[in-house]
Image (cartoon, rainbow, N blue to C red):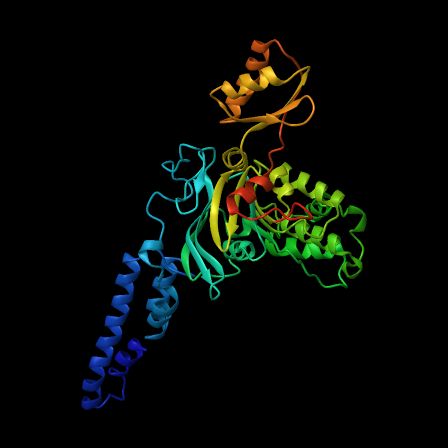
Length: 418
């Protein structure tokens, strides 16, 4: 537009002098707007939707002032500076380390030392009027299986949707150290056209995310989720569990580096759950898996990292074992041959024992300050008393008990889910 107006002054039909004088301020304003946008672009640490080089061409080549306005409305990153990751705090930042106790509390963005981060998030908030997600900091090590647990409405699906780009946070930032085509998502309720066969569904997914892969990639993905015998069946006749498996096959066909699964076992029977969990566990090290579940036994079985959400806030983040060790009292059930009074008295006198009491018959229950103290102290006390030990069994320590201790929730009367 600017060039056209200037060129018009040199053609056979000259603009009236008065009109040209009136246009000079407009031309100056347009040039100033372009200059402002270019300076802003050069100083910006990040822009949206397009690379910075592409925005230069938009500002300069798209008709003024359209190009500049497109940049101002769509290109400028308006994320508050306080929410943007600081230099060196990205996925590969070696300065991030776990706390001395091994715990990673929400708000600290502490990072396990055993892996570089493939996902980091700071201050993620999505407010639905009192519910949603609030100030969540996340750190997911590359090659780990990360389990996200919480009660219904805790914010698990909202968090996974933000990480996968299907929803935008009200504020906060997410850094993904993986290419977009190397990130795959399987929702909690996959849906496919019923007239397609399982093979056609997965092949369609392949054509979108991995067009260079061949038909063998489709067969491999279908076989991995246990649908090889149903590859040529139409999806309309599939059960809910089979549809869930098919959704996972669509996610796997592109051989993703990061796999995000929302309640992947919710529709599966016990045998199907076991097969899928074995599949997820086998991915450890070769790809990163983030999955949510309300079945705590599943998370404990395969997840080496866990995040616990309650009311939209991340209460805990860190190794599953550390969560159990920290929030559960180390306890053992000791069975002896003969009288237990002498051993009980010796245990009570030991400095490492926090509580000793009868457990019926020839058994006593021993609580210790730490797991190491109990493992070393119990055999030593029994040997010093000359007693005969029949058995020494740790009292079951599971993720459910740690979850309830951390969240303050009561144990459900009918099951182990939360």
